[in-house]
Length: 335
Image (cartoon, rainbow, N blue to C red; front, side, top):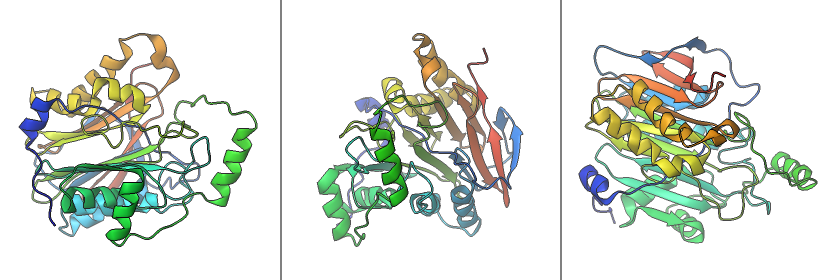
């Protein structure tokens, strides 16, 4: 049963649906072959296919970009793109091999938004690797927009997803080592790289977005961050553009950050300026921002992109015209 179109973007705005996301790992040893440069905004004269993603997720973003180059839709490209990292056991913040919660259980969250404004999400799912694809199934095959925990897992099996153990020997060993101190203090640009967010524009000019994560490492059982929540971790309005967040999900949720970025672009801001303003909404609330990272990436219908973070170290992948770049983001805290 194909799900009805659940709501138009304007209705989403009116309902004030809000919340927010986390951030994916830039692993040591990940490919460094892509060009790295410092930039504040990337602009193209005319919309063309483009894929951007959080952190140095080169393999995933290149997979998405190459599919776009072949004429695949933005939605197809991003789901297949993030699947690369979901299947990567060395990535400890997404999919198989991800860092568990304090009880040793790996639970995954994901959401997706299509160009027509549809949305699907799954929360706290165990035993399923490709939760971004599962979120798409929720969007397209059910009358709902969010499914959680065991219900989402059972739905996955009904759709042909395989049951797989997500806790690998390496992540289990690290968890047991953590138990010796049980010290929960996420480090900036290390522990909180718990999301891969990806945005793409296809050759038809349509935009889609996705994010997928295991959430903060050693989180409390049942914790859900911003990544699967519409308007927080991800928001897409195909008439305007899209944004996705990474970092400390609790802080993104409090400001409905991705929705804010898109609304700022709707009112005339560039993607770069919109990302900067969204970060300023967080940091102006006090000096707690010194202890956590949040970053945004965004894209508008002109094909312009932007990114901004609280602290130095965040990067954005961009794939266009057969070229992959790892772009160093500008940041707020230059003290």
